[in-house]
Length: 351
Ligand SMILES: NC(=O)c1ccc[n+]([C@@H]2O[C@H](COP(=O)([O-])OP(=O)(O)OC[C@H]3O[C@@H](n4cnc5c(N)ncnc54)[C@H](O)[C@@H]3O)[C@@H](O)[C@H]2O)c1
Image 1 (cartoon, helix red, strand yellow):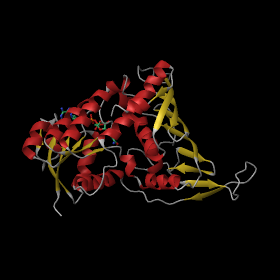
Image 2 (cartoon, helix red, strand yellow):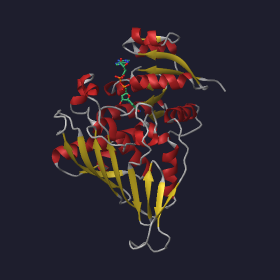
Image 3 (cartoon, helix red, strand yellow):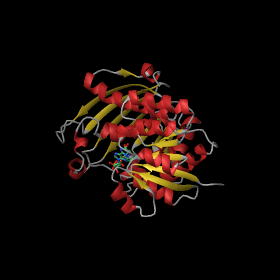
């Protein structure tokens, strides 16, 4: 079958990762790269056509599909220009920077009839697919709640290299928690309300370094989340799965799902159950490990994007779904600032 001509907009940290995966993928052929740092990017990619202007890349290299890996503020305009040209998009998370720009992008993709996929790569892990099946088949009964942690210590250079990370929007809620919110929406169900407390006590930046979040799901389950980028721990999904070499493997679970008949740890997929039909706190509880193979989620994401572009699969996450993850994540900061519980149901209606 013919290969798919693909372009990449933005060859920074994640763009370079996508370029490496494309180079090793048999079903894609790199048509061109667009980056304002064209000279440097051309030196790093001597065999590629590199453009400083992404519109020139779209018009001259004529890709059938594009990966948008530019800064968040550019996602919407990049995506809209692709839609106008009938080009399918894999757009990095967050889908856009604001709800307004997300709405404009959603309208453009619908009007053009292009296919879209948001780069919440965690959806492509086999452990996630296995967790979803276990929860759906009622292995732990009805889900009562989930308790989760995402805590690591980012080095000082992370902030000095990019001072925007010290300001609103640059903290662990919008950069890191958004992946977890998306994972929870995907594995448990829709989030209907959030409440939160933020703290900047450790670093003293304008943006939070730590947060506690309360989550209500449509199915009645309750979630609590502790997130921090100034605490040392082995408990993040990145460390637990070992999904990339930047985050050394810990093999530890950072999620605990609790149901009416048992519990499940993630990503280790340890299932806890009692031998009796009638759950009872006086009975012993046993653990069973469930196996799911570990694979590179960025390659699995590319496989899915290929199927989507070829019209052989429905998108695991079109832009309108990415907008819901953005809405729920933005509401965390708003809930903390206002001290109010934020109900999301009406907001979802906007996209
Ligand atoms: N899915 C993931 O695991 C993951 C990980 C990191 C980043 N991201 C997301 O990917 C996006 C990029 O993040 P990053 O960390 O790679 O940022 P980065 O700053 O390292 O890279 C951005 C690149 O875009 C280029 N750029 C800027 N303006 C441009 C323009 N007008 N046209 C073309 N190129 C332009 C920059 O020169 C830079 O090379 C963000 O949306 C981020 O949230 C996703």
